[in-house]
Amino acid sequence: MAPALRSDILDPRLAPSGEARIDWADGFMPVLRTIRERFARERPLEGVRVAACLHVTAETANLVRTLIAGGAETALCAANPLSTHDDVAAALCEHHGAVVQARHGESPDDYARHIGALVKSEPQISVDDGADLISTLHAAGKDAGMLGGMEETTTGLVRLRGLDALACPVLAVNEALTERTINDRFGTGQSAFDGILRATNLLLAGRTVVVLGYGWTGKGIALRARGAGAEVLVCEVDPLRALEARMEGFGVMPALEAAERGDVFITVTGGRRVLGAPHFARMKDGAVLANAGHFDVEIDLDALREAARGVRDVLPLVEQYDLGERRLNLLARGRVVNLAAAEGHPAEVMDMSFALQALCVEHLVRSSGSLAPGVHAVPDEIDHEVARLKLASLDVEIDVLTDEQRAYLGVWR
Image (cartoon, one colour):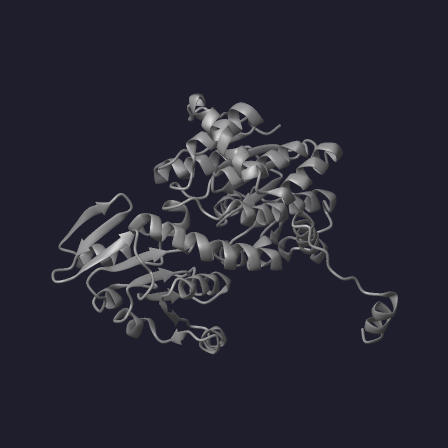
């Protein structure tokens, strides 16, 4: 029997405001709501222990509600110490029967302790945003015998594919087409600028925005920056992505060259020290540094501190580094700006992401024992089902192949 967890770190008096947030988000999440209604009827997850390491927001709460409706025993910890909404966490505990080990602004030690608590509960399925939970389970030798896990970030999948001999199957939710198209491009594309503008109230029109990384997320950020009237420069290490950015009308150049021209820098690569001392030395006075990648390692914070004569908080989420004749402005301590400085993705975006997660949990339960250990693609039928449900919620109809068309296409297979 797995050890029991308790939610003893949250103030239950916060629950009413958290419940209102959850209900508000639910009104914009029709796909997940449809799945939750089916789960409540069918109970496909009865008795399954699910542990999730996600951003503790109202949208996440509706995923947790869906898993519980399906019969799962669900525990949640934070994927980022600054993204937790304490009132939402309290509402999940008080009104929905979830266990939450998370608190806004928790220390690194508490963060690790909360993940460790979920590991000790011996989950059968893990749901990750950044792979902290599944990698800790793996290090403890507790991924053996699990039904599996899910990972919804590019960075997390890089980590998982670098692990030695995963002992359970993990579904690469981040690589599902609906996830990449909706979450990465449209979700981060909008919410990254939401965070930047909330923190600074800058006018983007006429400024030069440097996007470091032109994957699915970088594409969305570049598109939104251009739409706001900014000149957009892209920095890449992949020649195909760099060529794509150039053919889509963006300036492409090395980061050191862009450092001299940019007004706002947004890292979204998943790599370390994408912006470092050589870049800081070339930047303009007043340049803004933001990170939209998962971890706070893309901007070299140690090098920035070493270069600075002093640091002051000029706004609640803006640290200004005095480099002598120039000042550089770091947002949200280098953490993921769309969550640390704003609300994260809109509920309509997370509706599809969490619909994928819910259906993937169901898939792991139904296919118990049939998937080999390692990283697996999300089945096409799940991807298509999420898109179908979303179109239905929008009252959008599409064509279907005729028997003749289907037979013709089958000839060439």
